[in-house]
Amino acid sequence: MLREVRHPGKGDKDIVELGMVDQVSVDGKRITVLLRFGEHRDPLTEYLVGSARAVLYRHTPAGAEIDVRAVAGRAVEDKPKKKTVNDLTLDEVNNVRHIIGIASGKGGVGKSTVAVNLAVALTRLGYRVGLADADVYGPSVPLMTGTEGAVPQALEENGSEVIFPIEKYGVKWMSIGYFAQPGQALIWRGPMACNALKQMILQVRWGVLDFLLIDMPPGTGDIHISLVGDIPMEGAVIVTTPQAVALSDVEKGVDMFRNEKINRRIYGLVENMAWFTPAELPENKYFIFGKDGGVKMAERFGIPLIGRIPIVQSIRESGDAGEPAALSSGPDGLAFLELARNLAEQTEKE
Image (cartoon, rainbow, N blue to C red; front, side, top):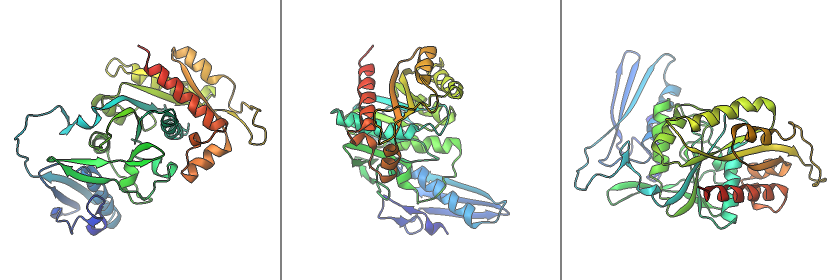
């Protein structure tokens, strides 16, 4: 059954064929599997461990205890140690000017849609941009960018593993979705998900970027705290919808980033679904979820309102088609360009 787990970076061969299954033991209802890697940490370690665990859960009786662990040979220490996070160096993000999280207090507010289109809009303005999809349980970047089925290349360079992002629309994309089979649920506990995301960000060959956007999971959990603590993220943008009930969710997000243990700058608030504009009446605005909700929220929390995105049918259609709305010259595209300009201006302020 472990032959179902394939390594995308090694010609899509399975982990049994690659000799990675070091030990399998069964003790009553407990199944233990050890996956052995080389001396250098494989960039897809957490993905392979999680995939193996998912396969075992699918093929073993209910109630079985599954324990899948990664073991590795000891690396030779012949170079000075560099600053690391869980054995991952920060070299690959050293040439990134701004690392900014795109966050929301809850799901369903269009955070990923805003993140993808903001990345494309920044590129249209001439900036060098990358986006890391850190929404580990619901990665949507492959679908929204038309890159489903793409497999990032993973190579060893100078004794360490690096992953090369997928490039399209002038943006460098990376998502945990590139390493999972379609429809596959990632059965990962918090610590495992955190480690996988750190690998996905810190071992990617981003190159020189003006902006690296991190599409964070919704909410304010341990993944957020871990990412903010270990990734040199300088600030965040919070996405919300205009209705009054969204106020408490915005407050949670603001409180998290302003907590003294995190203390990251909030560049601004984005009011998504601000109004409805029919395609046949592009000048009309219908405030379905309430008027000026984002303005009031921004004033209450003392943060700038840097974007108001309308409900336009083309935004949904473009996302489903893998062609971000920010590529267009319609009201949706212009709204994302305005958001990108405002964010860029905020990053230049002290």
